Length: 178
Picture (cartoon, rainbow, N blue to C red):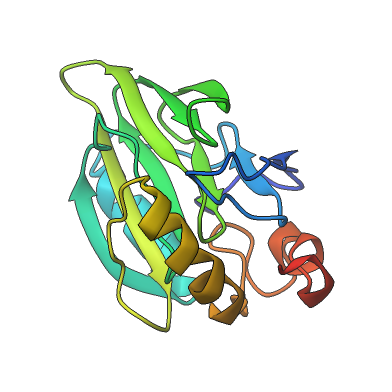
């Protein structure tokens, strides 16, 4: 049995640079209910899906309650348990209600912050091969540095949910990179 729902398309949003959070001209993606979370170990289900699609360096936890971004790597967040309202795109971004089976894929520079979460909220984070994740807070100095590092982040070879032919590989193109 497949861990993903067939033919699912992600929601896409492009967040503008707000002067502190650089965001990215490539779209932020959200697959709603993409992963079939069973009654066993939902974190393991998500880890196996991400790993099979070439995304690794995984962790299990929640999402920080302060605004931050990653300027050296793209990130996938798969919700295993509970629910949360997460703001993506910085203070001027958009709030999304995330539930088990949802996957958010953030191009490097995308601001994110957990606004509220259930006590059992659990996320699996993963990254394509490349540099290690670094947590970056929104300051003018960090923003200036991020504008030089984000364009150097390589494009992933695969979509963490749908694999090598998934929507990410079509939506994230070099022409979108700053």
